[in-house]
Length: 162
Image (cartoon, rainbow, N blue to C red; front, side, top):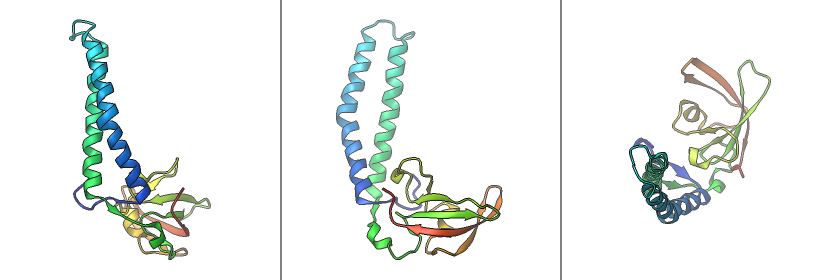
């Protein structure tokens, strides 16, 4: 997370992330502590793969806990009903066609934490996300990508992905 803008999350995602945080800080920490203790009982820690694996898992879990705490502390809740006016906003699915392409691709506009299934996510703070915000189906927008300027047509703006 950057300090640039708070994540905009739907109430459902906010609740899911709170539940994940609660699980990690209770059950997760207990299980990791048990795994570390069991590995310690095996003897020499310098060559104990179980111990090192458990400590690595502990570090990753604690990192995720810190990430979730920061995210939830600064998150802004958004209601998908507020975005049903046909404009691109956080919490909607947008169907895009890149210039020169005949196929379309659906993207979820929002935080990576909002990801649903295998649908790609476009952050509202990313160049494509900034270019899309406030636009409607039929609009074409250009944005700067690492490989140069890209042009996309907004084919459809749908409601929140489920």
